[in-house]
Image 1 (cartoon, one colour):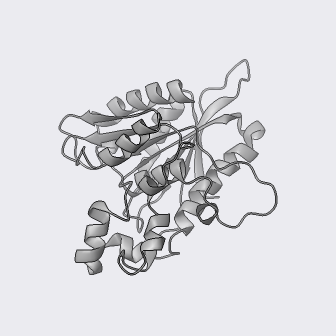
Image 2 (cartoon, helix red, strand yellow):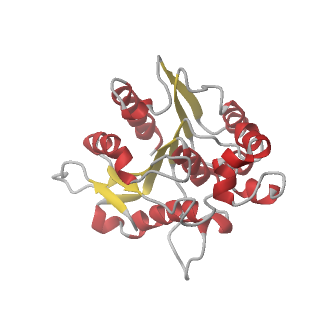
Image 3 (cartoon, helix red, strand yellow):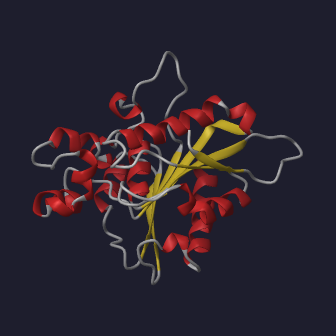
Amino acid sequence: MLADFFSPTPDPAHRARPALVVVHGGGWHSGDKTKFQPLSIRLAQRGYVVASVEYRLADEAPFPAAINDCLAAVRYLRANADRLGVDPEKIGAVGGSAGGHLVGLMASGADNPFLIGDVDGQVPSSRLQAAIVMAGPMQMLSGSVAEKSRNNPEQSNANRWLRDTVDDAPALYRQADAYEQINSDTCPILFLVGEFDLPARNEPSRKKLEKLGISTGVRVFADGKHGCWNRLPWIDQMVDQMDSFFRANL
């Protein structure tokens, strides 16, 4: 697995720590694990074992390869919990933009065999206990992603990633749709977003989660634009929110 690990200060009592998978953005076709290094370091300083992961991008392999890789990272942490000092019952994830979409899909689709991919024999669970989505689309079959797939197909990152349009492959887009797969087993999801980055984007998902009695919410950061999670002063404000949410839900 391609990942950078960031560990907190050793615990003299050797207690297992909660772990976080950090998933970078880039429209599913660019970016790498180094993009979220500042965020990962700050989270490790708060006491989490952090795995900043890479996944196969659109030009390397079509969907579902990327989500297969992200869920494999969760299983890796669980399978190697003793060696890594991780509590296998306390694994969360955070991602931004396309990485936010992937984290949303990890939260809602961890039991979907298509998203899990090929695994041999008995393997640890792919489930998260908590997730944070930063300005990532939960909806693929509907909403702005579907509109661009339909109305501007040559410029659609989703079409490039799924190798088809929403109208020609609705079943495939449904598999990639985190909103459609939200169910009673979905873990708590917090949404973090800048003021100028469409805070209402994931309102349907929040309403669906609330209806199911699953903890959720949105935190909007003043003057923030897309990608503000990698910039001061927003990164520190967001880490405060992440730490509070994960301490309550992991």
